[in-house]
Amino acid sequence: MISATRKWIFLKASSLLMVPFKIWFLVNFVTLYDKDYLEIVEFFANQFNSIIFCGFIVITFFYSALSISEIFEDYITNEKTRKFANLMVYLSSLIIPTITIITVYKL
Image (cartoon, rainbow, N blue to C red; front, side):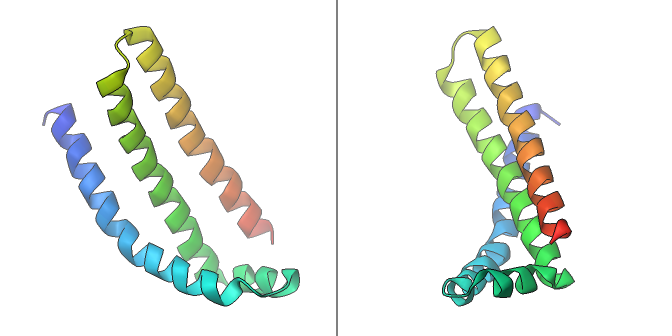
């Protein structure tokens, strides 16, 4: 399979996967908006909520990294600069969700 085709399929699949996660996040964000710190910690202490939130973060960063990579391929003409920018995006899309997951599970 061609790399561009695989990327396109991953973009479409991850965007479809994000829909139920976004709905869950928005519904829960509205309910958590006026809560104090202890109630938010209690919300994330629930294993179901923390798993769903971590899945949301991972899928969102995966989708974002693929989308930004496509933008770099279209607008950055220097090969070295494009590779470096893609590397930084992919690293940040691995590091930030990992830190978030560790933080959520330490609550």
